[in-house]
Image (cartoon, rainbow, N blue to C red; front, side, top):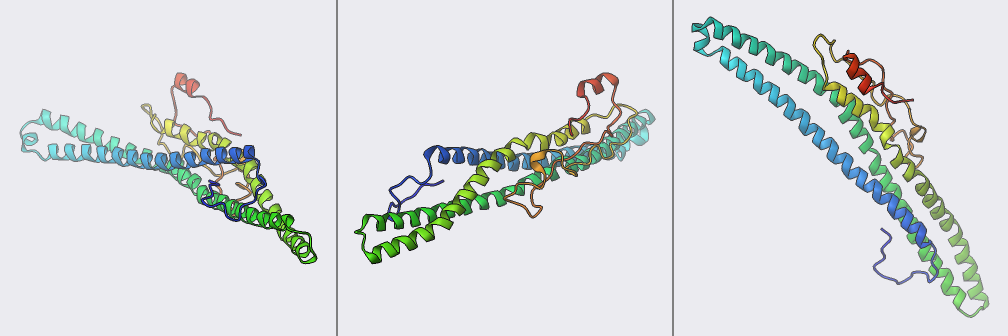
Length: 268
């Protein structure tokens, strides 16, 4: 990340400790991996729901084709069986559509919202890198004048270079400190953000006989739930960071044993 192809104009002094740079690269690397995994998960979830709908639509088409077959007109028993099949396939298609709508609201859209954070995060890292380059350039300039003979003009230029260096150094240190504090928080809060989504995904697959319509299992990602997410990352601001959802206890009726196994959703 901080690789420098040419050493011209670089300071001799190590202005950022190697341990700090290693910590920064480790934390940013984890977030880059998380960004890729989030993008891949969103893409796979979309493929899964599309395939689910395509399967049930195909089943409905098959049952309709069977109903229009002349054999059904000649055999009442066969007609009754195919009619029952057609009814079952249409019910399955309706359930799949409802399930896919639920997954879209409680999983895919939150994934998309979570992924929208990363461009701003990457921009903040680029600003930090630019500040570091400016810091190195001005530090090298100060060192150059410090090595020269201390004449009046050199001392004046040295003073001016130090004055230019001070705000740049403070700007870099502030950006670096903020990112080092907030990147681990952002990474650590991912489980709190996605847990309601994954609970909703599990419950969307379960519909015992006689259950009420799925409805809205969760009001996904509507209210702050985790302290690290209140207002999003400070470096992002402008309400661009997502907020985790708060699960509502409005679930599909489950058999008592299943309800005990799944338990209540964990949230604040």
